[in-house]
Image (tube, rainbow, N blue to C red; front, side):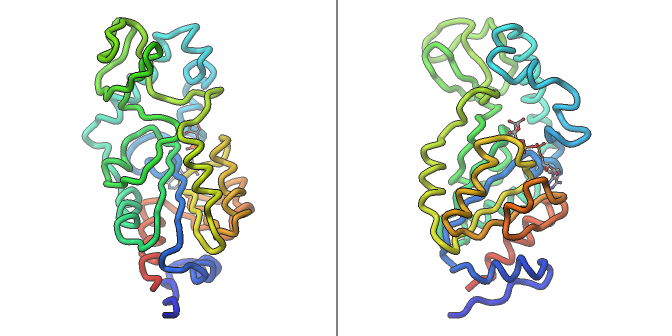
Length: 260
Ligand code: APR
């Protein structure tokens, strides 16, 4: 069967690239803070972003935690509470990606740099949280991982080993190795020509995630950037789709699911 043309609402060059895809192509999606912006969560590097309000060196490194654990815990406690605000819900972009995973004939792997749980809540299941998860605490003594909805402090007890004062946010800080890199590397390496790599709502400033597009492209995959605006790395992608994620991502998913 020949593929249907992608809907006219997509830019011509993007529609042209999507026509190369088989209906069962492997898809790898990388998301960043921009996909959760319309759910009410801040990005990092936009003008109103988190790193404009606080220095990352003060709250997001192992050194910062060693120097001032209360400050670091306080920063993540506030972000955890913000995520629990009932107004913060998955938006149409998160839901569209969950729908893509359910309805696409091939494998769909979602890799997120976000530590919020909005992909999870939207129903994505083949999901890798490479920078950790805000709603979990990790014991630095026994390695135990625990669901955590309240505040964390140095008086908390690890539910696994019973030691007091060793729980930290389950967050990958600058200078630490992102999680599940082997699985992500294997998936990128297994990409074949005319598979698809999509990067959504990330500025492409932080490695190793920022390097995934080059790996996907080296494997022959079609690469698409989806963002509010073209990033500095836009030239690394075959094509781009620009606008608010709550509109662009459902449009892209509709176009993909129309491929037969
Ligand atoms: N729709 C689509 N994209 C958006 C939207 C939106 N509504 N709003 C903002 N964006 C885009 C911005 O244009 C920007 O390119 O989202 C991107 C957010 O970039 P960053 O703030 O740098 O976030 P991210 O790329 O996820 O950061 C990577 O840096 O600080 C660390 O560990 C943190 O995981 C994070 C990593």
